[in-house]
Image (tube, rainbow, N blue to C red; front, side):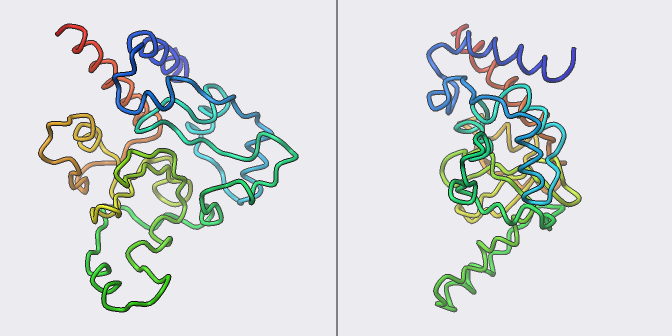
Length: 225
């Protein structure tokens, strides 16, 4: 069974088992998806921003949906390209022009000195800690809440991997690895935002399937109590 079919099977199981939306964020998406994109839609997007979407994410858009059920409050998907009549630049919420620039990080980053600098400079609209250069080559694909965002790396050495932007909480930017996923799902964890420097970031499919597996386990354990 190929990976897309495996994901679809687990998604169907989770939607049936979690009819009351116990999994975090499930009330937002209710295990629904926006319509799939066509190959033409994706080609137009890639051409416009001079990029190539990672194959796993591209297959997801083509075969499962353009946003919907997923980690956090669900997958964001790409917007504004389903209709030829829509002018994407007027619809996109994200700063898509940064996509073609390579993602600069290979390990967890958190330069708190930049926050001190920002507080001392008092220069309007000049926030060094939140500079877009740290998220070049990424597409924000989920909102975990509390100012934490999941990003898919599009360009650079980490292409196809998931990273976490946790700068709102002064935790920097770090790989989405298994310890992060475990901490996020475990509300009793004392280390909700682990230093993920020693672990490899998950690929899109690994990240998404890990969410499915943990969510299924949560519902099964809940039904046994």
